[in-house]
Image (cartoon, rainbow, N blue to C red; front, side, top):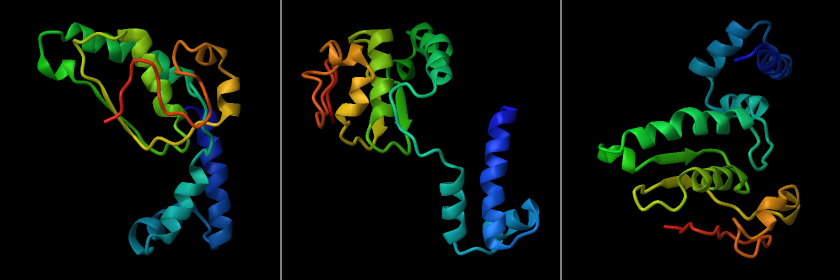
Length: 159
């Protein structure tokens, strides 16, 4: 974790310490992991979570997929497991994250029948305001009709 993220987490947890009356992080950690009923753990996770959703939000993650992960699947063409990549998009609210992954997969692999790709995610409805930032998506190349509230991406099916 880079220094900026460490400071962000420290500031957010510092607020939880002040609100709960703990003097240091060690005591707070012990409380959350050993003595708490789970309520404070939920509050702590809410405090350190970034509640923001958007298409391709973390560029570095998508670059890593393109440069490291996807080539691994292509190189492993003789192994069955590499024909069936599975992804889990946890904590997505309106669906931009799993849709971003699906778009990235389509851009990289195309519609190759060699791969049976599945993404596990809770898909919400994408707001029109979320689509406006991505003219490529509005062109119809990715989203069929590109209308708010639609869940269909060209070349994808839902199971």
